[in-house]
Length: 195
Figure 1 (tube, helix red, strand yellow):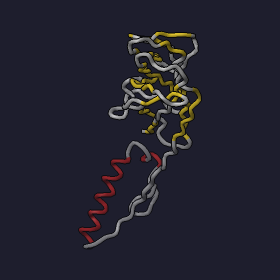
Figure 2 (cartoon, one colour):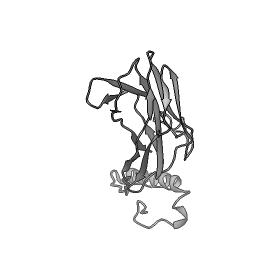
Figure 3 (spheres, helix red, strand yellow):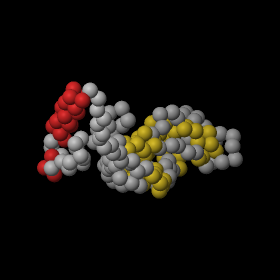
C-alpha cells in the first residue's frame, strides 16, 4: 500500500488502522492545498472481479406415476431443509400415487473464481407447464421449494450455503380432472446469485 507522500506504510497499519491512515492522508492533502494553492494527490485503487457461478442439473424433478380421478388433485415432491434432505411424495384431493419411483431435482452449484463464496438461489414464481408427449394435454407445476433455509433469498439473504453445494428442488404438480394418460415434460429455471 502506498501513502500520499510516496513512502511505504508500516505493515502494522495494513488492516486495523486503514481508516486512520485515510484520515491522516486527508489532512496531509488538505494541508498541501492550503499551503500551495493547488495540489495533485494520487491514490491507488484496486478491485477484484468475482468468478462466475456454474449450475449443472444432475437429476430431474420426477413426480412418478400418478393416478387421476374425476376430480382435480395435486402431487407434491417435498423436502426438508438440510444439506442432504429427506425427500417425500404426497398426493391430495383427486390424485393418488402409483409406483415408488420419484425424485427431487438436483443441481451442483459451483464457483469458478474467487470472491464471496455465499450463494442464494431463486426458483420460479410462476407456474411451469408440462406438455404431454404427442400433445393434446398439459399440467402445471408450482410451489417450487428447495433444501435451502427459507431466509436465504434475494431480498434479505440469511444463512446461505457456500459453493460448491448440491441444491435440491421439489414442487407441486396440478393434476386435472380425468387427466389424459401419457408422459408429461417441461423445463424450469433456477438462478444462483453470488453475494
